[in-house]
Amino acid sequence: MKALDLSEGPVAATLFRFALPFLAANILQSLYGAVDLFVVGQYCSAESVAAVSTGTQVTQIVTSLITGLTLGSTIIIGEYMGERDTDKVKKTIGTTLTAFFIVSLLLTVLMIAFSDVILRLLHTPEESYQLTKTYVVICSAGNLFICLYNAISAILRGYGDSARPMIFVGIACVLNIILDFLFTGAAGMGVSGVALATVISQAVSMAAAVIYLKKKDFIFDFRLPSFRPDRSILHKLAAVGFPISFQELAVRISFLYLTMMMNSAGVYGAAVVGVGAKYDVFAMLSATSMANALAAITAQNYGRGKPERARQSLWTALSFALGVSFLFWLWAQFSPGTMIGVFTSDEGVIREGIPYFRSASYDYMMTALVFTLNGYLNGRQKTVWTMISCTCGALLLRIPMVWFFGRMFGTDLGLLGTIAPTVSGIMAAYTLVYVLWEGRRKRQASQA
Image 1 (cartoon, rainbow, N blue to C red):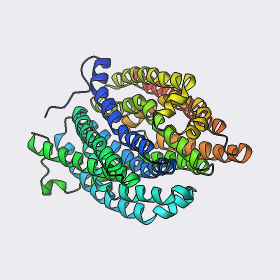
Image 2 (tube, rainbow, N blue to C red):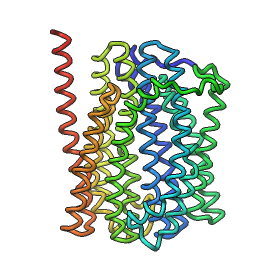
Image 3 (spheres, rainbow, N blue to C red):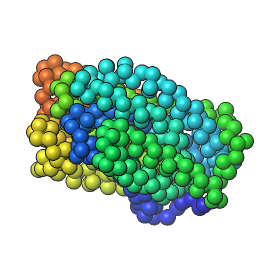
Image 4 (cartoon, one colour):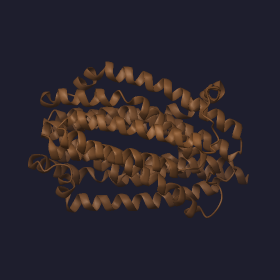
């Protein structure tokens, strides 16, 4: 298996060649929850839609933690690839897989044990409570597959291969769609069916990835002695990955607080936030993909001593992410009803969701700025800065604003929708100032 050298060739061509499979993989992965919600919306009640909406918000806690930790692996492997240190690359892979196996077991126990506590804290509507718990427990039972699949994908991306993770997630997505319709549509299993379909599809995807890589000439041999963790690399992975994971968790907690507020409005409020969250993911896919690609590209280029090339990649990625997000904003402004109607035909959900979509959609572009800039900073291992930035935005801005708006205006969805773009706009402003200031300081130091 040959890796793509991210430090050579035209900047834009290399960026898009590496980032587009990222984008395709993220689109496919986003279809997991979207298809779940779509199928439930077609065959089940508003209570089931609310259950999947709230349940997805809960299970994304795990996804957020994993994303941060795996991105740390991508960055470290990218750095060692830039330095041409294959021995450290192999040790990092073995350490990553072993650590994530242990993490997955801990997360499974914690999520199942505390599912009731989490759902009560979120003020989950009583009408959909048991359905939501069923969804969360089944999905949590599959944490092992989620963790190891994401770890393998992160390893490959740091190695310089973004195409194969796209293939593996494509397998999972196609299988998930088939099983969703089979379990929920044909067998009538409802919420349990979509949760079970998700777990099975992720297990198959993980197994396919391991089997494929073992048969190919991959840098890691998957033999038992190779899984022995290296203490120094484990410390480095923790130093880079934990700040990213913590910031992802802080952001997720702030959105869970918003979910709690919306759940107070009943089933319709919970359903609107759930549908809105799906579009948040799709509208921000370009930014997410570019940010993750930038982390690997920046790590390799800094490892190779080419910081200017990394900065050029940043501005190219930022332009693309903003352009795509703008198109989704236009859709939300001129036809929000059609957006909501993709997932549910319930007139109450559509009516309540229109003002929320119009106000919340400004966040698409603000988040594109934040994500892309943070991806560049993460690739430079400035993860403590991004952790402080995102944590302050989530805990010191978003949660107090949700509380204030809730006290002043109740559950007015249109007003609650303005919170996310306001917070993201503030974060985008100070992050951009930091990147420009820090870049100027570095250039001045190199010229001195």
